[in-house]
Image 1 (cartoon, rainbow, N blue to C red):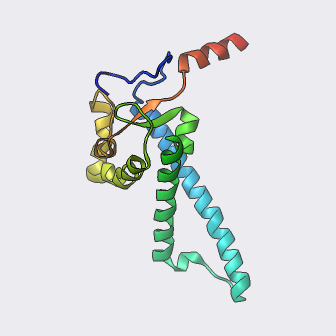
Image 2 (cartoon, rainbow, N blue to C red):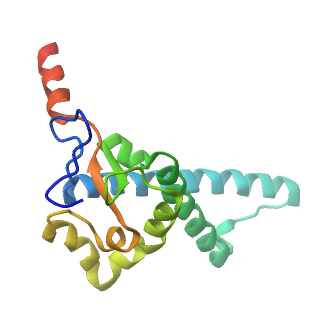
Image 3 (cartoon, rainbow, N blue to C red):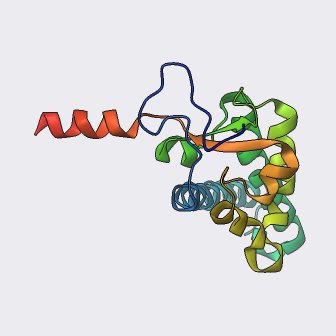
Length: 168
């Protein structure tokens, strides 16, 4: 996607424009909260079921390695699967973002998996991989560059604002 934005056919407003660092951080923060909440609830249910089956109290925090591996697997699935299916996680959907290929077409499973696998690299060296979002015209982080993806706005913010104001 050369230039400053990929514009979807018939798009207006912000739709198709590269997403900025604030929007992307907001979506990521929502995703982290959802990952933590679902993992915590599932862990509590699992502890309860294991305690019933074992006949004594079971605590998953005693198995730190297993818990950490389970959390990493859950986070991987949470990010990779919805992006491969719809191009967005729950946080991205709430904020109005979508992951696409660099030519603007839909993200394939391969790019979604690579994007998720390379995400931790963007955190290395004090988050310098994310600094690229602010520095590059196409707003691609390190994991986007390595996976051949970009994040764009997927809703028309101007039209949504006008509809909101018209209701007043």
